[in-house]
Length: 209
Image (cartoon, rainbow, N blue to C red; front, side, top):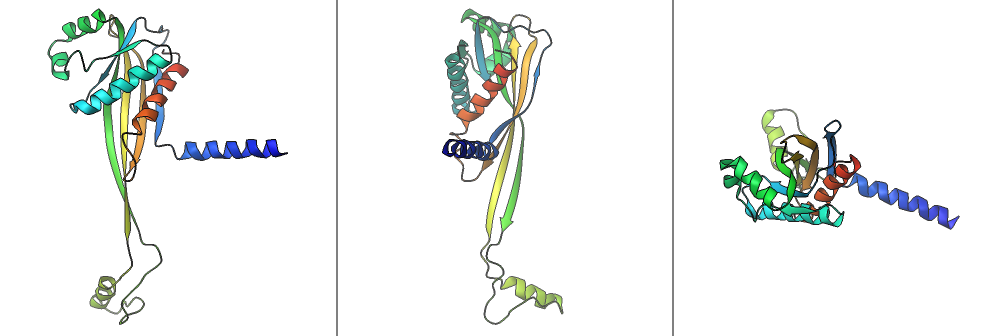
């Protein structure tokens, strides 16, 4: 009986953790009849903020390698400007380092929402109680003297697209769209690891790697 109860508690905890997860993979796509890429996967993050590019590329390369998929970062090979300036030279550089495919992470969209709450009900100064609706000024006076504390919470929704391309044929092999919901009090750097892990897990599930 205790074992059964423990199992139910673990299941409930798992559901709770999943419901609180900041990142989720919304949808994926895989090219029909596509084969798993050969050679290393070159990882490229499209973001001019170098620290962010390094952070994502290092994480992708690390988790891919841990799962048995050879990978390499590109921030240490070419800048985004150099890649844009000469596509062929960039592909040759990645290929020379053993890459047969390239995984590109880019920003797809950002949205924000703000919610304000007023816990504990309405509070006023001792001179006025209740809402007065006789005239606009009385209504304004009551609202002006409302002493209730107000708390605000802003959420940022970041949508990313990750795509895997074959360097030789230039064809897209796989792509996925993820959404990360960030609250004001969240450690955004700490969320990078589970985000990358979930994207790679989706790739493995689809048989892309």
